[in-house]
Figure 1 (cartoon, rainbow, N blue to C red):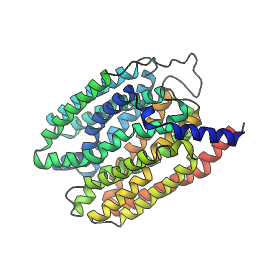
Figure 2: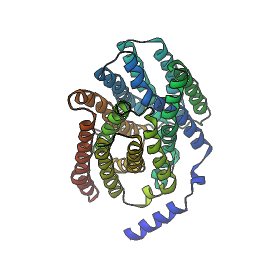
Figure 3: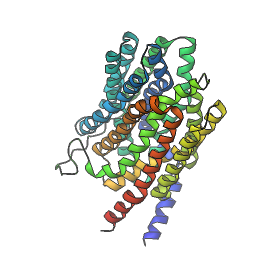
Figure 4: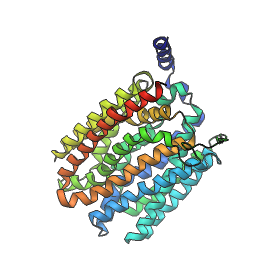
Length: 401
């Protein structure tokens, strides 16, 4: 009977087309996230360069880049709790509007602490809009198609990864940093107006709170979320220091690495989006953790643009299914899909994204970039072992009762 039920579920998912998921609200939420994340991703290769030209050292760059994730981490917990009182639409609008003002701050300030404060606020805005948008999609999508819907929805940041880093470098090379920051202000306002068009969803209010689920934190989702924390650690360090490593190697536009990665992510999500809901999620996670480790090993031995693009392709393959698979798996593991669960999962991910640049900002001056990438490969290996020997066994024990 269990096997028969699994086959019926697979048939349902296969029959569920992209068109069925593309509702009016889904499309508006998609483009609202797209416009917002474009500004975030445009800073990937440009912000470290901007800070270096202002006179910041590698540790200061690591802190300013990394504080984005730290502030986002704590703000996600607050945003997840706020979604029990306010609609996803209102939280998204607040995040987009505040984001626009932060870019004006990047134009106005030059010293470390003001820029630190601006990046802190950008983390707050990201937490609000991204958490609310993802919670919105989870809420309006049937559970049987949740992994597929998340996969398609998260194409928004992937599309921006393909064009925003290259576009950001093009703008600063041709027009300067002020033009880039003003462009991002316009994009943030576009995100605000897309959020304005969404239909309000009623907040989920829980009548009781338990030791594993309170107003701000869902403890049951922590165990599977740690695997995403370690992956985000690697990704955070990669986006913070790869541009500087590429420039050191004589590559003028590091954005091509991100574009190559994004191209594979887009292909994977579009062509294989149904895989997340039809195949074993644990096996998918393990396969692509191993692939990510291989990508970091290869990057440590790469010094030319063709090799960087090749590694970007491998990294893109590794992460194409990783996020939708891990969040769908984590929500199933926790037995909850409300804003608090989504906020907790994303907060833990942000902890990794923040810790990566900060820790590796200390490692790089001691070891150099190539050894740092080998350190990131070892993090991928630890993550693989953690998921295989702890998360899977714990999941089987929980679901055996």
